[in-house]
Image (cartoon, rainbow, N blue to C red; front, side, top):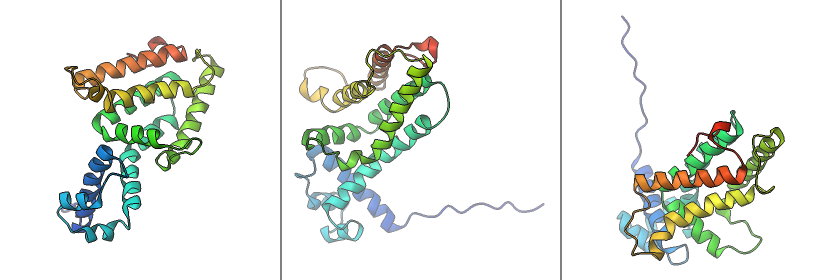
Length: 222
């Protein structure tokens, strides 16, 4: 009987661990204060390293910010990409993307805060760097919308899918990043699993109405 051969899992180096802690700290700081008001000294203090040590991993604040944004959005885009560029009925894939979106923001609220800050500070006509990678997903979303209309499984209220996208993104970003701050007297936690699930069902209902399909026509439903 041959001995079992176990695959060795590479150990995370001290440098990798430090880089990860820097990203975690910077994510909290940038999400709370924005790029301009955030200080590298605060990141270094929280991580427990000298300020100069940050520059071993990131050459400046902009590089650190870009790395944080890439880290925040990469998992969401990867998960949505598998659905958008995969197979299956159009309504079901739309519902899956909505579920992934709401669940991702609920699990990582800084995603909503980054989007809110970028939208508030964006120059008209200029695509924020953090959203550049999302362009291919918008194009694919348009193709999916056109396929649904052409085959008759979608009967949209409006011919432009980007109004639907704005409704989905805007409602969840506001719900997670702004609602409790603007209405502090409200006794609810938007990230509570029950509340978040209710929000997800609401978003699905909105999309079903705007795109003209229901759960009997391929969507997984509210």
